[in-house]
Length: 311
Length: 284
Image (cartoon, rainbow over all chains, first blue to last red; front, side, top):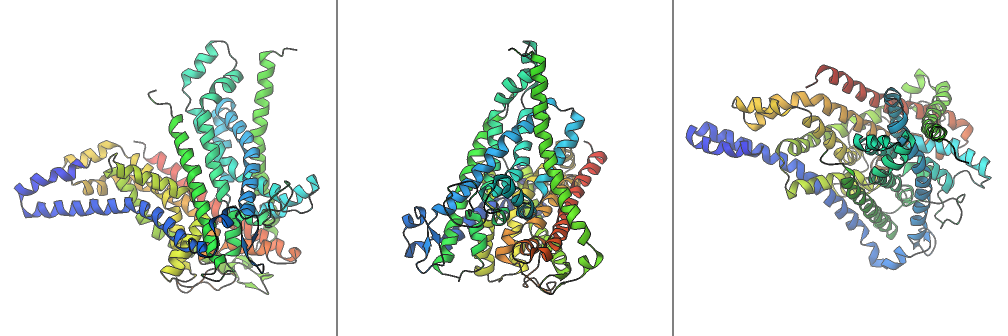
């Protein structure tokens, strides 16, 4: 398609100055669009640059290992400690709970929508599940804070309402629509011939769904789960409100924890600009940036594999 | 004991149906809970008055207006850049290394957690460019955050316009840009609008980046883009977690949550409606 702009050039010579102007204008416009396209690369670069700019000075006062391997996050104690382990394990615990809860439910729901539900039923149910994805995270956090917390406390006899499990439950609810939607798309992209061949061999619809469609869409379901995982790791407000905000290494599901995201959001308002604490929070941001980058690139790799080409 | 195939299938399908409707029920319960407990406190005064007496009386007017300002400013900043990048990807770009890098960057940008955007906004807009904690700094931050969604939506809209539209214009002697402007953009615009409204609904509900770059605990309606701003999500966060006793603040928090939910889901519904109307009007 770019050929048009290029082909204008010989014509420009033969027709005269007006066309030369037109040709130049086209080139400039094209350049503008290229610049707009490139801006997203620039933004990613700038984000990383600015995180490092405010994060790296932390390493002037503290060693990398005291940060990555530190077992205590106590930024305002008399001897401030900036150990990543408590908040990293908090993030891992809550995310793990969320994925373990969300994945089977989401895959079941996706399989139902893709293989069992009447098309008209799917047209109504799927958008309704997507409404769940549209609910702002702060509203989900609010719901977890005032409703789910009490339920968790009552059902599991927890000491406090806001703990790893409450956070994980809210996060699961937030991850479910993503996983359902992407998994269902993957299942529906399994070629018809797969199902027809299975049915023709005498398998029931259930056997076809379970033994043919599900394995055939496995990489899509994996990618969906990883996308949900990426969102879960980055979720801030719901975590800030529901996990109990105690930066301690979790030993039980019902213990209050604190995630990396919540640490940044709750402490950034109180730090002095340029203090080690300020720089430490940017270092946490660097880690979050890298972790989500890793998860999302892995998800993209898997997604690239699941499309059935050459149908 | 061997169960017959039919029995196994019926049982399995019921189990799947149950899982699916459990999700539906959870969604319905959340919506119902917020609506039922938020509605009693909702009134005309609540929407049109500023909060008084440590937020225990009055309404949420500055937060509503602040949210609207923030949304408009963010979209104003993100839409031109998003459309331009989408036009590049859909109309100009060939499958080169540069294009693939751009796509990779967009995908990665979409995965960056919102709180990291907040840190970035704090570093670049609030401090480095010296906007201060302000409406403008928040809008820039959120604009960058919704950019990937916007680009993807706009590109998809451009790709739904049939190739023959472009070829027709080019055959009549139009330059490439002229063809895009007259024969592609007008037909892609509604689709672009749909995508943009969806990203707007994300801006309206987003909290973490605003918390780090421009949110005010309590402020009047901003008079300038360099003022701090009250927004609904942050207001809800403060009301529910930082104000005591809960007995006084919980009904206010519920009503605020309901207003926020209506704004965000209303925008989503609008996007669906636009898409529906457009699909019926043009089907190529």
